[in-house]
Length: 302
Image (cartoon, rainbow, N blue to C red; front, side, top):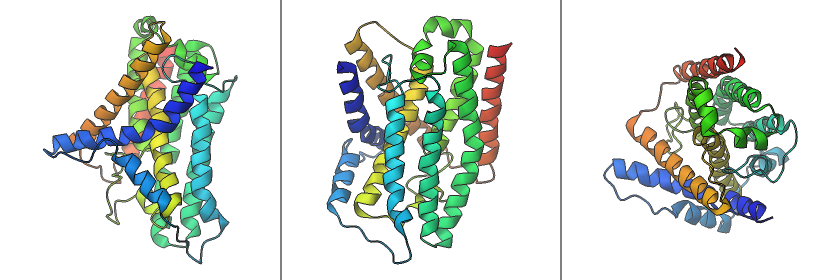
């Protein structure tokens, strides 16, 4: 019961802090002080207090988009183990539900953008769907590879099965898999080099353009959902990349929190030393991640 409470508390409270750490890291590289670590929390509180404006051309789909997206991401968070602790919800085959919950969230985000009738938001929706079609095979191949090494179809078993000894046995395969998962982590969360969440340039916007018409609490749900998605996929990556377990529950929770903070710093470093890719280069990198995952699977199956 204690693990479930800690799992839910971290899931609800920790995600915005990741954005604050990323922002601080980027500010340090730029020689600035930057916004406080807790700035994302202040922004969410400010949005919740505001009113919402809805266009007369929109329908219930536009209002349902942020709600369904956040709900699907919250359910996905209950399926992923944090650190070396099993997820609150676990069953055989939950990895399929996990992947398609993100698909459901993306579907409602894109149709909410299309519901505005704006060709500008339609452009962003088309780009989002196109790139997601190239990113999803990598995620599925990675989950299949992990399922093969663990002998299970449950995420809790798959992600807690990885150990340092397993790393030594399948080192090359795991290195390829981690490279592929890190690329997908950046792509699925619209981070540089795939997208810049702070840009407002018409020709380069992808995810940001789809949510321009949202305001107030609805926009707050979108921002919180994006932070939660980063947290969930980051937890997936951390379980595979750093499979440390001490046997002490409290120490394992601390290791997980430190690992997630270090991952946020790593993302901030990547965004500080790299420029955003040209749109024509993004599919090539996503296909490359699929190839890495496929080679990882072949090494496991041989």
